Length: 342
Image 1 (cartoon, rainbow, N blue to C red):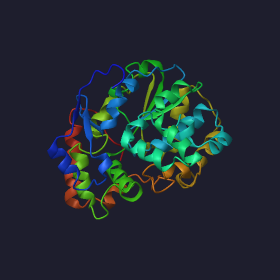
Image 2: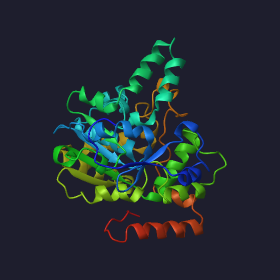
Image 3: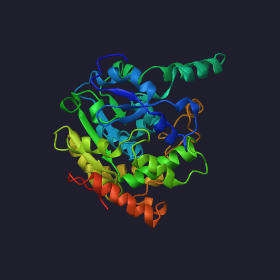
């Protein structure tokens, strides 16, 4: 591991791996680890980058978007970028979102094992385009950021505790949270239908068991959210809910604009909200993943935006599972004033 990193990293136990293997199939993801006091679940490759991410230099004009995966990250990224860039819709359409955020999440390199990198190199040795993409994928995002002109736009699914300690004292940070039941459903379908890491016949309740027991990637969910919630009064932190975005998109846009010190007319906010309306957003070609990059990852679909529906979890929770999930939520929120909008 490069750089100083203050937290313990431990491998999954044999029992944890056996539980995961009930639905999780690819052999190249067989090595998971727990990180820090909360025992966040990450790939073993993360250990090689943890110190460099934790000690990554930040700038006062950086814009950072944080979230647990499938909490409305992409929607928030587009809104943040446009508001911070004077509603430059032309550039937003011209430059893919992932490029506007310095080639993706800062922990991107933690997804590719050396074995997988060597495999990709061999497969694309005679393909100039493929070889270039492999080289780009190999380069850690924090190195890309070091050579990116200001203002930089940064996104990550890592919790605040694993990010540079000076984050909130240095740059504007937006955290988006979503009802954990909707988050679980969205993760389930991402991996089942898109990345195809879940056996096709796996029932949702089996996946939710992994999510609830903090054995799924990025969990524990509640520790992730509560770390940000505890910092919601920091002047450089704006904590928003996906549910509020869904109910009052313009109101959320105004909050972000105020947070950034930006002022726009009613007509401009209307234009922004039309651009971000879910039907338009889902069909926005600038939001998806480039075709050339899809074949190098696990994504089977170029656009991984799904339904954007708040409360859609009710379609996948039977009465017994819903009651169990509510008990799980209540238990985790018992000692906090965090509540998810209904």
